[in-house]
Length: 185
Image 1 (cartoon, one colour):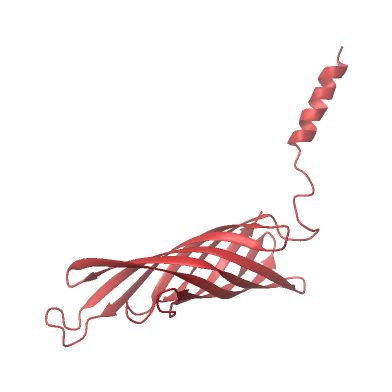
Image 2: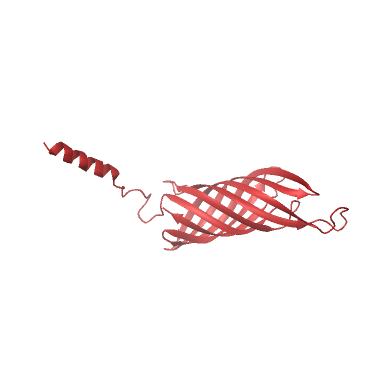
């Protein structure tokens, strides 16, 4: 009897075939998004001057239309000691910032290729710097608010993102302006 083996083969083939309903709506972006960005980073003024940031994010589009993503970034900034410093007058010091975001974004489609995203979420930042030969560090938690503009070049999304961090301890935070490239799958 070859009928049960053919039936089993057809069932296995149907189970392994990708489903056509993997998108929330016809023509909508893919369910997963992987993003990379590099740009300008400005921390609060009491830590150091502006610098640059590199980050990666992985997100998932939900059936409600939201994109939930986790982002990890590393920023590098520098500043100068004051001229009246006894040990290093005018010398330069560097700070390294590790930034983590849990982002909720609601993309709004404008036309066929343009997309604006409203970002919100929570953030955590830990930074290290060398001050007078001693390594010091501190951490901050807070809220994230931002705006993102992208051009849809399926499967790529290319654009720029502006984020601002509002810290829990004093309310003032840093901001990021970074072009990004995202792959939607």
